[in-house]
Amino acid sequence: MAVSYIALGANLPGRFPSPAAAVEAAIGALQGLGITLLSRSSLYRSTAWPDPSDPEFVNAVISVMTDLDASALLERLHALEAEFGRERRKPNAPRPLDLDIVDHAGRVSAPGETPILPHPRMADRAFVLLPLAEIAPSWRHPATGMAIADLVRALPDPQGATLL
Image (tube, rainbow, N blue to C red; front, side, top):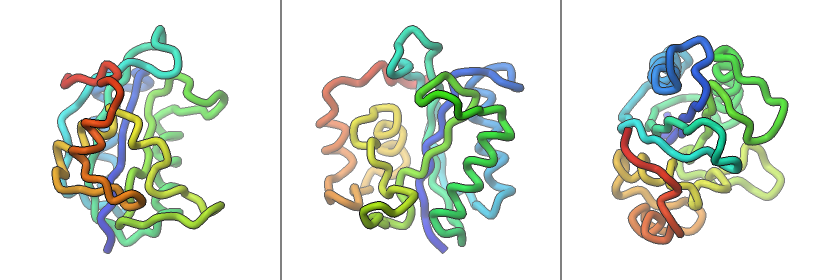
């Protein structure tokens, strides 16, 4: 069994009344996929990137326990995204659900290995670091060893990430 951290985000309602409802539904749906929820953050709101004129995102981070390896976990996350209506036509486009593995059992991927772990851009994203710090205040970046509090302090700005 491995502890993993998964970042969730949505900025389109899809089949749900709001992005927040989609994130909540995704947290529930993940528990039926060989994934046991350990903890969850509050919901956060963040400015869309790279186009801040797109709808704001609702974000959260969860910690889970799973027997799945990182590749199998990512496959299940992508399948759930598709079930929620995500289409991968254009990078960073608005979407009804985005699921990313932030950390899987502290594993650091070898060059060229997929999925890339820990998530390669997590240290630059307030909408990942703030909810992660809420549920795992003693977490350290598996590749750099930096404490979550230091990563949060190193953010250039909060990127519009606030509690919902």
